[in-house]
Image (cartoon, rainbow, N blue to C red; front, side, top):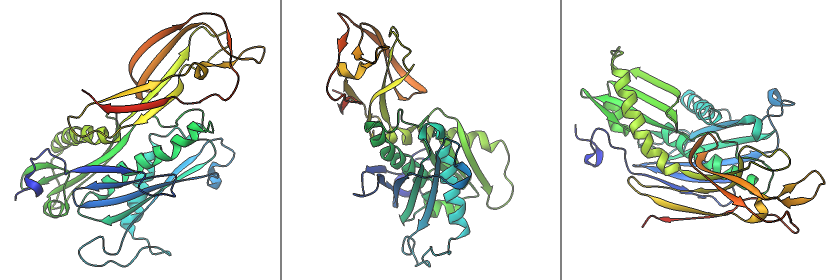
Length: 336
């Protein structure tokens, strides 16, 4: 059996994530993964389920459905109490996957609902839904940081998913529908950007399979996920005033920029950090910038810092008047 597009065993299908695909959703994207297309939309609700009320923390949940003609023959439309068992399983998986990387306490008492609708299904719809839902969620939460509704972006790491299967005695990454149909073993791996596992689903389609197969499947999945994470990449800028006269946050979000990278692509991100972004209220309730050393950190999240530096503010204490920009302007361009 020849793979679709003449792919090698370890190759992903072409993957593109189009951000801001919808005009009205707080966050949205269209995931085009081979011939599979999944539309992901994030809605932010200023309420939480009853079991989360009074906890100070939020919730993340998901809904998943396939359009009637997302497949070769028409399916009965889901909804109005007609949700298939498979769809229930997948939407619960999406919710678990997103909650694994969201700081629910920092989210506050609000709910993010991810709606994942399969426009066209050619295998890997749950992987596409999880991968796209993460992007939609980040796009929905980022404006809340800009508006100072959220103090920090409550996202601890990236999350994505990919399938691996044993087809004709070979391990293949990212199965399309026909490959999945032919697979003797089928597995889905959900993991974070740091390589921690969120969920593993594996089944022998024609009977049991040897456990020694799992490590090889995991290695193949993690290698494929590294390429997927590049499509989701975000650069975040943090600062820490070491010498302020009052205690300051160890990591204060000062800017961020979402980037979509193709395999092998490199981009340069630049942040413009304004002096007023370093201001704070001192003991006399004056909004000031004080001289001293400031640590600068850049990473994909607060727990994944990849670059560190520092600079010094000199001169007298500066009183700041007028509006204060909360986040710095960010730009990115292909690396020369």
